[in-house]
Length: 353
Image (cartoon, rainbow, N blue to C red; front, top):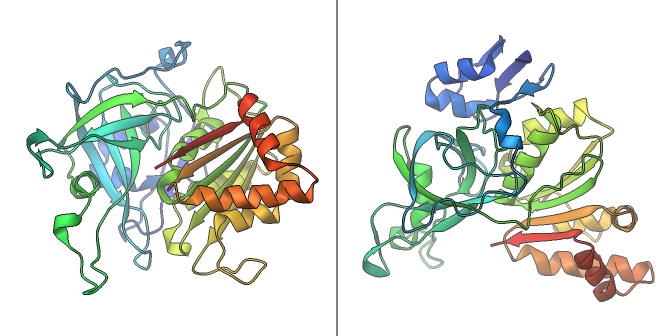
């Protein structure tokens, strides 16, 4: 087991958690569940060993091992708020114990069925909701028995009164954010092939996320830069663009800045803070504005075979497409033709919700 130094993420409980040890998985299990969720892998001295090795043996991703009508009953390990008090809304990092019975690959999703009746269909269970998995196939404890989700609590605020209407809140996201360690959770899947991480360790990856769309990229980056995976040694380039409202809304920022320090030749990280930064035109800084700043460089990488990924709210795509079209036209290209080329070459990956 590789030796590691772990420290506490910002906005965790006020008491300091700082550990230096061998045998990280055993130590994680010994910690209370709430503290386990608080740990972020910072200042890692060397890569962390992963098990079981047979998770690397499959040649095809697992698909729909469990269906919504016959879900797997997993258990909540921990739920942790991972944004600051000035962030708009609440986002939680949720660790689920599946006992190694619902394996998945990086870039896939789980379905979650909240308990109770569907409010729109009395007598029927709640509808399944899909969540991108925010951990590698080995989970946050590196033993292949857990999966992590990044979930924003969905609430509805009445525009006239300014108050939340509990009757219109998101059933599944509130169930997950309110869950306690040991609670049962029904999961289906895994599903999805669009965002699977290509196997080529020399590839270039341009990752664009808004909010909780960061989930699959956290999984990618942990596999690339944190874990000691025998048959995967990343030597390419990963470039992450993350758009959120403000500094206190940044997700997994400590992990990403640590990779930036340790792997400056293989990782780039740019953020767009819409309520704190201004674009070059003087408006709010959205992720598409940040992409425009590096437009020529991004297109050069795409011309050389880079993969580009988009994950987050579907409302992000029109602005991003407009920005990419403008960049293409500046280079004398027709964006529709370039997009068709990227899709044909399987360089274009989109999963929005």
